[in-house]
Structures are given as C-alpha cells and as structure tokens.
Length: 193
Image 1 (cartoon, helix red, strand yellow):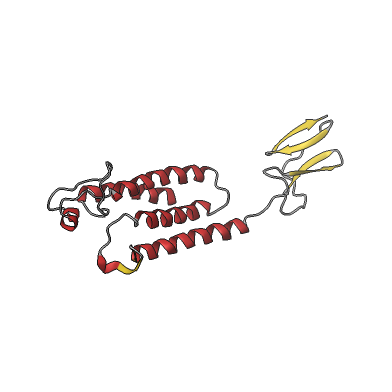
Image 2 (image 1 turned 135 degrees about the vertical axis):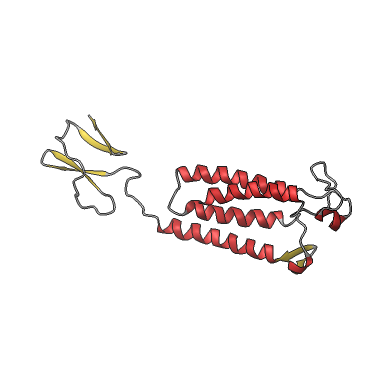
C-alpha cells in the first residue's frame, strides 16, 4: 500500500501544478516557474517566479514509489516499508515547506524567518511515527541462529530440518544421509567431503 500512496502523490502533485495551487515562495533561479495572471500564485506574488514545489513533491513521490517498491521486494522485516514511507513523507514535507508558500491562517509561529504551522506539525508527527515504527519493528524481528538456513540434525543415518526458533526436530524432509557432512543452505541440501 505504501508504494501506491507515494505514486499517488507523484501523480496528484502534477494536478496541483496544472491547477496553480500548492506553489512555492518567490525565487529567481532558472528552475522557478512564473504562473499566468489570475492564478493563485500570481494573486499572492504578482507576476513573480516561484519555486515549483508541485514538481519537487511529484519527483519525491515518484522516487519514493521506486524506492519503496524495491524495498517491498525484500523487506528487512515486516512493516519496514510502511515505516520508511512515514519517514520519507515527514522529511519530504518538512524540507518542502521551507520553500512553499503557506497561508497565514495555518502558521502557528515563526522560527526566525521560517514559519512553523500545521503542515510542519503533521510532518514532525509523521517523522517521529516513522522512526518509532522502524525502531519497534526492527527490535521485534526474530533473530535466526543461522541466517536464511535451517539447522540439520543427524539421527540414525537420516537427517531432518529443524526450525531455528523452536530447536525441536519437526521433520520437514527426510532422506538417506549422504556420505560426508550435510549442510543446509537455503533449504537445499548438499554434501561436503
């Protein structure tokens, strides 16, 4: 679900650009945009170029989609992708709001020249929640005695897999013991002399 939400952000922010909302603060760099007369950005800054915060947010959404999709293929633990999404959303919004225009009605206080408002409040909550989810779930993940391999016990000429967590011999597969030492690697048995 988390990669899909990031993809949705990437797509919807293009709609914000086309609508002329969610615009940035004035700037004079080559990558800034000048919105046409009658747009919300023009009404706020009267024919000045502004940061293209819609495109910044869209790029982070598409990049987040790719990153989270890759994480989803091999997550380090359950919930890692969701925690990473919360962390990414919080950081993205905190940084984006440094150059994004904010309506004075949602500003709570000023930190120097930087306004702190409802958007930053939500960003801080997302950031803390992401860190918390990742920390708690990483601490709860089971630790195996052998990474990605099941231990093998030898019993009377036969071998069987043993789950690392239980340590009890629950037979999952049994066959005659090959000559040599039997190793379990990724569920595949092979003999070594």
